[in-house]
Length: 158
Image (cartoon, rainbow, N blue to C red; front, top):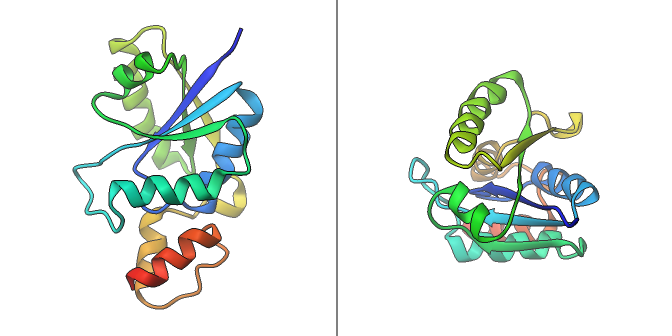
């Protein structure tokens, strides 16, 4: 049986932590759909098309991963794409509390959709898109935090 997993997020920008979670999910599931969503609570550095393209460039070496634009509720999107699993990355205990709430509502809305948590590699446990953007805005070296295409795109923005 082919298991399709979905990894939703805003990915503004994609970090090496995101790529690590994607690679690890791709080793577990037959197919991983990275779903780029708009988070209305955040002011993005990159528009949706830019984020999709940067993700595609950053994961092109993983054959069973696709990157798509996500619209609507996560559970509806998962249903449309036959995804049975949502992949979420956890960096710290504080992530767990929020992710448990989201997992609960998703399971209520779509009982057949499981959420799997993958803990961040310790090398990336501190890493977030917000931290990358802030560091880059001050000219810090972010080369070890993001894939090369993202580093170049961020340079263009700042």
